[in-house]
Length: 226
Image 1 (tube, rainbow, N blue to C red):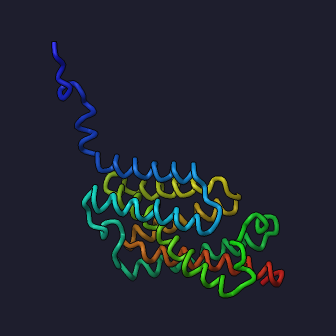
Image 2: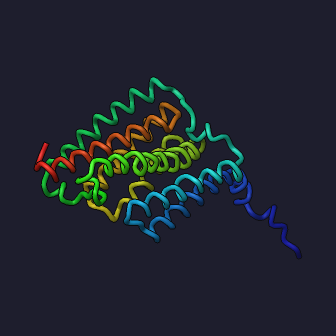
Image 3: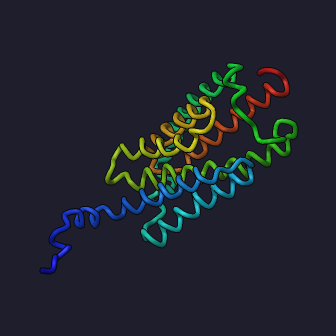
């Protein structure tokens, strides 16, 4: 006797109802897997891999597979007041945490700077504006936009913690101070995005924090302190 799979598979309605979220989750896990399997060390490698995995790929999924508006994933001005206030608070808290970490010799020695930026101002400026700034936006788009806002309707506040877990997972091979900063910054960024509905404010705040951390490290390298 033939079996009607439609009538005997209770999972089918569930999968159909949540297929959008399964697709986003699958794509997110695929990106993380590729990034973990193929680590990049040089700044140029990190930039191009971040561009492809954290921006271009999810962008194509949103536009041509999900057929959804990028504004729903944080690509809009949103609530500017909430965004600027919360981003400023996040910057102050994480900048203070960065200062504390850099002030401790043991932790400071575990952090690293891209080669050359501590000795050449123009290379430092080029790196921060052309490499670091876009990369922070790529990360915001993937973790806070694609994952957090993409799964928010089904997971609610848990999507914020999920994206933070995923981003921290990528830093798990790094030193403990960096893992701590990634965890803290991803949680703060997620909260800023949740309240502002925009990626722009958190991206700006995270870039400024990264810029400040680099400046602190450069000061120690060149002058032995602040």
